[in-house]
Image (cartoon, rainbow, N blue to C red; front, side, top):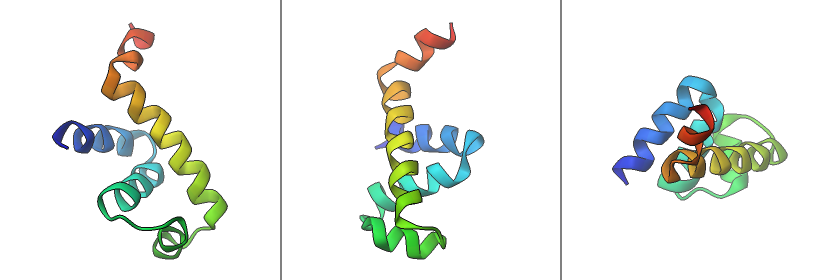
Length: 70
C-alpha cells in the first residue's frame, strides 16, 4: 500500500489527473462513472486515464520503468 501510494505521488508529478483517477478507483473504490462525476470528466476519459495509470504504476512497482530509464 505504501509503495502504491508513493508511486501515485510520483505519477501526480507527471499527470495529476491520472494519479487522481488511480486514487479514486483504487483507494476510494469508486466506479468509472462515480470517478467521472467527481472529476467532472467523461467516463471514456476515466477509462483511458485509468488504463494508462495502471500501466505506468505497474512499471514503477515492478522496476521495469527504472530499467527503461537507465
